[in-house]
Length: 451
Image 1 (cartoon, rainbow, N blue to C red):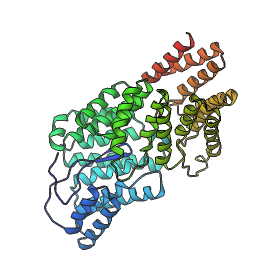
Image 2: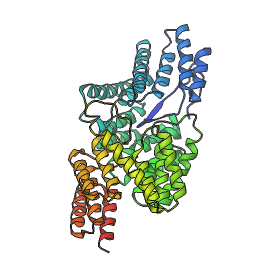
Image 3: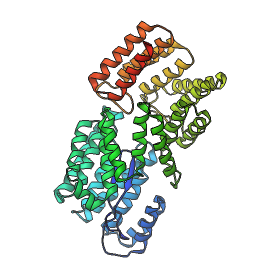
Image 4: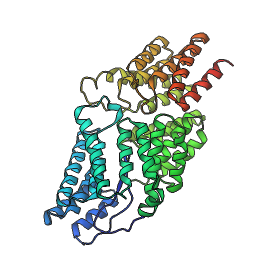
């Protein structure tokens, strides 16, 4: 770990939507408000940190470090998903830019401004707008400038990797993370275990996007360097769930829950931990625990979490409470029906998931449980039609996912021939795309079908 001081917040590694602070730059100076801002920042009290940095800047408007620190505090409160969050990111970019104006060789400010720019980008949004493409280019320019000023600032390679990951260029992302990890020992010596853990996580995430099993090894290495990197715990657990290793997933989710329970405030995506653990409990027949966790996920998410509602329905169905199960399945179909098309009209959608292809898919899954098979098939066909074709996104590649789900419908209808047809179509695409986890899942469905 780098030496800690009282005056400048150090490097931040962006792990998709999560930020990890892991060193503090050694400088001189003992400004009262800057010091207090740092203390509040390290406790996660970012609004209080900003107030103290405001005062520090009032007293010394030419201090680049105070602008840098306030920029990082704004960054920690930022998100592309809300107007307030976007405003915070813009404030972060402005403050980091001001720090660079005052100190043109401020390597860390270039690096952090690059991270702030890529927060506005996510491959879910492609095709990108001109503004998003410009932000991507600005991020690359900032990371390149950091390397130009300091060729040993290897974290900028990881920044490049994260930028390409968010832009949907997963192979390029891996190559940039490889460049960073070519300097593994130097990163370890200069920035410590947490930095190296974060970079292995980031490369693993890029591998997971395209279902490359190398993701598992990267996540395991990440946890070797930092057993408490929460994002690694969650993503490795999600792979274990997709491959049927529910007990292994539970152990990781338990660790993640313990970490989240210590947080002063839960983040926008923290619901995934309880949602994932609840699904595991449901599949293992521990229904009371499943219900508790799935309700917690919905509470933490502060918006309709459709997978949580779907699995609550499945859990009550497994318990024999058909009426309660039906309520949740109908809740899913109702929310999806009311939400479809709103994003295309430019309306803000506060529901998870929110993309039309994902909504059709999850509504189709609810229709399967309601035994409304024609509606389910129609929805899965729409998911195939609307889903991105150029690369996998998130946790599903819809040309495969839709066909697999249609195969499940026909299996429920006891039409073995059509079920096998769609499973084979899905399997063929999964093989061509190299989707190893999905391929394994479909092979298991085919085995069940042919028993």
